[in-house]
Structures are given as structure tokens and as C-alpha cells.
Amino acid sequence: MLISSDLRILDSRPPGSPRRIRPLALRLLSLLGAAALLLLPALRAAEFRAGAAAVNVTPNLGTAVNGGVGPGRALHVHDDLFAKALVLDDGQTRLAWVVVDTCLVDREVFDAAKRLVVQHTGIPASHQMMSATHTHSAGAVTGAHLCEPDPTYRAWLPDRLADAVRVAVNRLAPAQIGWTSGSVPQHVFCRRLLIRPGMTYTNQLGFTGERAKMNWDSPHPADGEPSAPVDPELFVVSVQTAEGKPLAVLANYSLHYVGDVGPGHISADYFGVFADRLQQLLGADRQDPPFVALLSNGTSGDVNNVNPRERRAPQPAYTQIRRVAFDVADEALRVLEGLRHRRDVALSATTTEVRVITRRPTPTEIEQARQRVGGRSVAQLSGWLDNYARDTLLLADYPEALPVTLQVFRVGELAVAAWPGEIFASTGLELKRRSPVQPLFNIGLANGWYGYIPPPEQHALGAYETWRARTAPLDVDATVKLVDAFLGMLAGSR
Image (cartoon, rainbow, N blue to C red):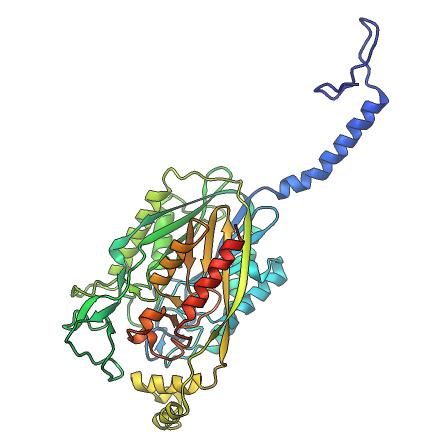
């Protein structure tokens, strides 16, 4: 028997007699209908969906602010801080990004937030990528230098990070996605400079003999060439509703921060201004649900926005923040114009843990540090020498190795690598160059903070980011181990 396109059985019958659907055809129709009903949920689940949210994480006035050698205090809120989440769902897998406006977040805080997300949404911790923007004008969450976090703010933050993901999940709706990149080279400069041959430079600890210096006091007679390259790429992931309305943008730029804020001000720095400006440029104000722009930090441990060869004239607070943010937003808008969005993308996540050796002080160094601290509390300490003496005592209790979480998220052909701590631009560029998956962009300060993690050749030059402390506790060869681990993860994700 033959089955026609309208699923009726063609039978032999006298000419002119009416068509009849035989019992076998009825059974076949019934079976096909049942199968279709069973397939409908799967077809619905396979639809690409996305949701985004922003929740306020602004601390109370009086909260500690880190980012300098000594502690600061929040005296005024210039602009609110947010934890922003983007959740993608391909019907089989969910991925969640969280980008929070703060300077540093250690693994304990991020892990606490991830457990709450698992509890409330079922998204595995391995499928959550949480990172800090690195604004230096936010509530202290993690201890660094002579600033310890406010325990109340630290304990409160994980719930807010989880809330951002929960709201984003609540907003999941049919969506489409695209990605592209541009370049904003005018605002990224290597802040580590080689010391000119024949020059002697005394660093902040009173030592000489290093081959590189920070640009804190630049322009300076000892300033030579930059010690490493920068990464000017601006990567942009655009998410739209099924109808083509802007839903969210996840952008990435390798710039440490800007920092020209008012004294004691709480501010999201240029990361916040970028988000507001891009929303305006896209005409996405007052949407329901709201448009959310996330600007993640790339590999910028040795990068800032100040050209060390130029002496900048004094300018009102937030002038440079707006200048940088507007230029980055303008470039984002430019590359988004005409971008093709898709719904046929598969999502995946790969996570691994790498044990990295720590650099711990010798017994002699511990005794010298103990004599300098002299039993004083952290509130009684000040300056570079006190800071490094105290950190020497803290590092004496560190384990021989620390577990470091690495992640790779895949969105179709795109790969996103999540690095812990503050990675140098040259290391991020190396992974981009060597990755078997293209394109790839890097998110730094993700899933934990382990200070600066310079590559071996930068350790050999010295200067601030290499000085052993909580701000740089890992082994000299740490990046070699991390890059190798990432390459293995990327090869396995193809």
C-alpha cells in the first residue's frame, strides 16, 4: 500500500466510489498524533532562550573600600553598584554569567553564591561564571593590603549574586544571539615600564635593582619602553528578543579601571557609565523587562588608561571615566550595527581545578616581618613596609598549593575563558593566539581572586605586581600551568 501526502491510504475501489480511510490508517494517524504530542515539549525546550537581570549591591556608607594600600571608607554614593546576570538556555544546557561591581571577590564568596544558585535554579556551579569588574570604589569584599572587608557586607553579597541569576532565570524567553569584536586602543597602556639602561630607580619598598617599575610616578627619568603588550580588543556578545529588541549585551575589555572618582565615593567606575551609555545608544531605555549591559574585565593586570609619557592636567572627577566609557560604548554600537543574530547555537561548559604552588616566606623573613609589625593591629599599621610585613606573616600560614578554578564556556563556535585573579594582557593574548577554538575572549577576576598572576618573564623584571604578598602569592610559573590547562580544556570542547 502507498501512503499519500495527506496520510490517507489509497485503496482499490470502483470508479466514482468515495474515498474511505481504512482502520489501519486511523491507527497510523493516532500513533503519529501521539508521537507529535510527545515531541512537542522537547521541541519547545530546544528553543534558544535568554534572560538578564541587575540587582543593587551598593554598600552602606561607612563600609570599607579597598583598592589602595590603606583602607578607605564609603562617604558618598555617586552611582549605584550592581550584580548583573545573563542566563542562556539552549533547551539542554544553561549557562549563567554574573559580573559584579566590586574590586575583588575571593573564591569563598563566589562559591557561597553558586551554592545558592544551585539550590534555587538547579544550574550547576560548573555552569556559573562569576567575576568582578575591579572598580576601586566599591565596598571591600576581600582583604587586600591593609584593608579588610566589612563582615556584614561580605556575608550579604552572596545572596545578591544569586538573586541576580534567579531573576534572570525568571525572565527566560525566546531569544537570539550574535557576537563580534572591535578595538579601542586609545585607552589601554602597559603600566609597567622597563627601567632605562644606566638609570637607578628606588621602588616604594626602598629597594633598587629591579628592571621594571610601575607608572605611579611617571613621567619619570627612569621610564623606558613598556614591558609588555596590551590587548585593545573589545568583544561584544549581543542578545536580542525573538522580535529583535535588545535584551542584553555582554562586553569585554582589558582595562584595569579608570579611578578618577571623588573622595570616598562609591562608584561603578567606567563599567557603570558604559552600561548606561550603551542602553541609551541602543534606544533600550525603559524596557520591560529591562535591558542589561554587562562589561566584564579582560586580562588587564598590567594595563591602565594613563599614558605614562604624558603628564595629565588636573580635571574634574569622572571626566576620564566618561571619556573612556563613551568611547567603548561607541565602538560597541559600531560593531553591533548589522550584526546577524542566531538561534541555532549549542551551549556547553568545561570546568577544571588546577593546584598552583604558593610562594611562602622563609623563617628569616617571617622573623623580620614579626619584628616590624611588633604586635600592632592592622588599624595601627600604615605604608608599604608595614603592609608587606603583615602580608608576609599572613602568607606564612598559606598552604603549599592552592586550588584554582578554570572555566571554558562555549556558545556555538565562541569560547569564553574564565581566569582567576589579575592576569596580564600578554597571557590573555597568548591564549587567544594558541586556542584551537576561535573566536575566544578572556574574563579575568573570575571565580576567585589570587592576586596578580604575572608570566615568568615579568616576574624576572620585578616591580609591584611581582612582590610576594596576598596581591601576588602564586608561583612564578603559574601562568604556564594555567595556559596549558586551558588549551587542554579547549581542545576537549571542540
